Each structure stands twice: as C-alpha cells, then as structure tokens.
Image (cartoon, rainbow, N blue to C red; front, side, top):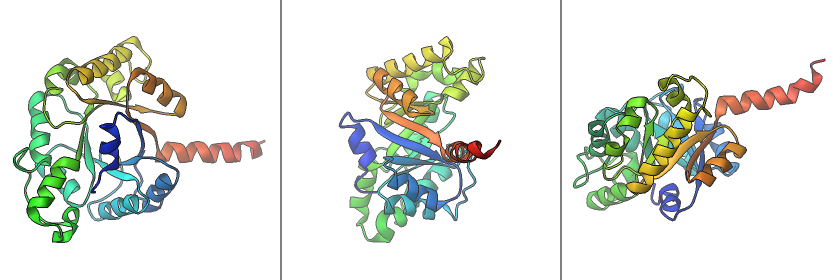
Length: 253
C-alpha cells in the first residue's frame, strides 16, 4: 500500500474517481483498473465476498494500480483490523452516526500513538519484511479512513463527527440519506441537497475531504463543481446490466 495514490492525490487537492464492487470477481477489479479508475470500493456491506476471497480482490487491484478500499460490513475493531491486515489501502465505514463511533474507528484503524490497532506483521506489512516500527509509521501515514454520512442522526451530529482527527473523508450516501429523511430515492430533493451542503460545509470547516456517490459522469461533474473530491461512480452490477441491455435491445423486435 505504500504509497497510497488516492490519499496522495486527495491531499494535493485533486479529485479521485472510484466505483463499487459487489461481485466476488478479481477479473472485474482488474478491468476497473485498466479502465482508469483511481480506486475500487470492495463492498463487504452489500457484496458477496468472503474473508478468504478478499486478499485476491486486493491483489487484483494492486496488480492494475487501482487502490483497494474496503467498505466494511460493520465498525467493530475485528472487522476493521482484518480488512487492513490483509492489505486494504483504506476502509470506508457505513452507518456512522456519532462522535464516539467515529473515535472508535480511528482507534481501531491506526497504530499507537494515533490509535490502538493491534500489531501483526501480516500481508499489509509484506509478511514481516518491513521492520515493525517503520511499518506502523507507514500504515498510520498512508491508510485512508472514509466515514459515511447517510442518516438524519449522522447529519445532526456531523459537526461533532467532523472534528475527529485522522478521519480523511466524509462520504454522503444520497440514497440511504433520502430514506432517512423521509423522501426515499429522491436524491435531488431539497432535503438531500441540504445534506450535501452540510457535508461540504463541515468538510471545509474541519479539513475533511467531501465524498459522494453518483451514477454517471454527468452527475460526477456536477458534484465536482460543488466541491466533492472523492467520487464513487457506479456499481459493477448496475454497469453490467445496463451494458447488456444496450447490447441486446436492438435485437428485441
């Protein structure tokens, strides 16, 4: 993971473009890298991957120079530790709603003195080929932490959440946020747009990077124009379905 090009680009005020992977398919990860994405979010919240298959997905990403970010299924210390020990360049944590939960993520993901992550020289440390002290320092420096703001409670607590040190990205999940705000799937509803503005404001105020999910390049350019810089565009299953529909539709007379 050294160096983490996504984190480097973000802190150089650049935009990074990623996509969600829900299928347990290393070939798809390689294709995403070949197509020019900066990162892939390996989705353990909604996807079909297992603990045994995760290292292969991460290897596929590294082979094609696309950064593997793991969206963990929950924010327990064990879940976070496992994703990072097998070599994820960062974690994306869903359903975060409080200051204390956010502090817990940092504690689980960072080594002393930034947190209390347990030490083991596994794949992330080149199987022990990096001296422990150097590895702990490099991991703290290069691991990227993304928290998802996708409920009304998270939005209400966002000013406190945004103040937690060592969180890099605040990521708005517009679909879940629309549900929580009582306007399901209306991602352009004024309530959801207000949520966007709050994420942007708190990110500016507390030196975080604003992130968001979009479906296509047009939406991506619109959100980039507003200031979002960590953009997740599309999901593997949706892209494949659309491509096959377009391919066969002229023949369905």
